[in-house]
Length: 56
Image (cartoon, rainbow, N blue to C red):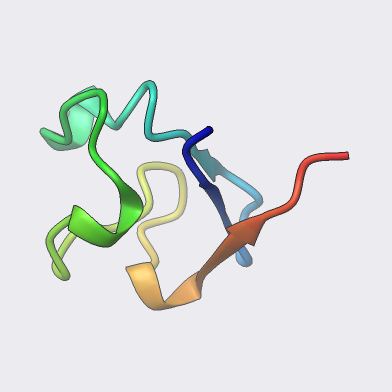
């Protein structure tokens, strides 16, 4: 299962199965493969503010 990542600023979750179509990130794109200049679609923060998301 692909790892999800959560924004520490706004709690938006990046799911690689879905990607970020509005940010031109195709479904199936691993978080590590997202360009460094990509920003959170909800709050605009950088990739540096995301941590691995642990599902319960």
